[in-house]
Image (tube, rainbow, N blue to C red):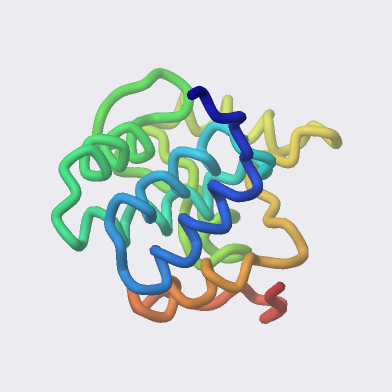
Length: 147
């Protein structure tokens, strides 16, 4: 007998499992935040934190997803070494990387668009992101507020 998909219920169960350190739940939350699925907003910072937590527990697909998140945002070059200092200052974790000055210039143009919101964090972080930010030893959001 087929069951109806309930996104809110799936997220609730993933969050419960993630509190206990479930690597699959952490990965699923990372995927949902990466793509804006299951009613969650698209948020690269939250996605990266959940993927880092899952990868720290040995989740292979999370390691692969982190490689994608660490690629150049402009051209896709893997392991881009430059990070956006604006992202890092505002969020405590750089969500955007680039490989050279040209890609950096393209990223700066995206910053300058009023409606882009490329590196701007939401005003509130989900409570679970705050928990895993602490577990991973990452700096907290500058405004310190959480849901």
